[in-house]
Image 1 (cartoon, rainbow, N blue to C red):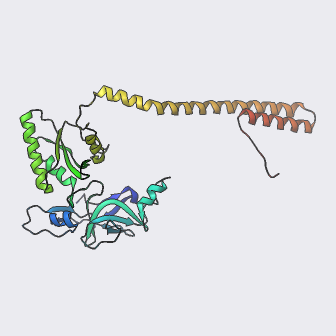
Image 2 (image 1 turned 60 degrees about the vertical axis):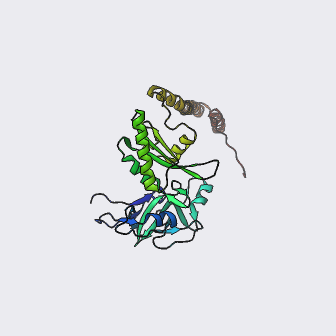
Length: 329
């Protein structure tokens, strides 16, 4: 087909794993309890009513390697889920001028992808981002699966669902929070929608969410490319502002304009200073050249001409703000 599931990340110049050309997508049906509870990607039985379906992203590109490790950095075997690490000629050498982040990225020459995955028959299967996976009673809950299921409920906006773990300050555990966008304003209809979303999330996760929030359209923060920003949604939720009425468009435009005015003025000031200095430099050069030419033409002795030229040159450099120092002569 024209499309194929692949795996890549910016730290490896985008591409890392690709399936063979022309191969149809492979979907691995795994036992939900085994993967979420033990991290074992055990194949689900044919009569399993709720398997986890994970798409194969292909094999590592030539010259590249991937491995799956546990929390202590020990390499795991086939069909064992853990953190995906990689290395190869396309891998980054680190973050620009950030030694601390670079040290966090590497482990014995391997780079941490920040993703959880497992490998089966050479294929890479991505199960989720480390920072996005919610741990509840020792089980892993994958947000994207709940998001997709809740988004399929009539009345919920497609692409307007986000699931994340919020820290419960009283117990120190993670609370499962589901935020779903809807245009529904009728209270009985909203209550029914909330109930249905709660049931769907419970069925997928195997545990009920701690909070189900119905929010207005565009309440779920996204990147410019449309990807859900779970961390930002969590911050909004914990600050109590998710789903809060948004300012009018003119107010947002005005606020952004003022926010961007400072940097623009600084750039304009630097540009103006550069232009003025360049103009002043050319004036100094032109005047110095004219004076030097007159000195050469009018002074009768060669020594006087050289002395005048040196004086004019020093004056020109001083006027241009250029300082020359000599050492070791």
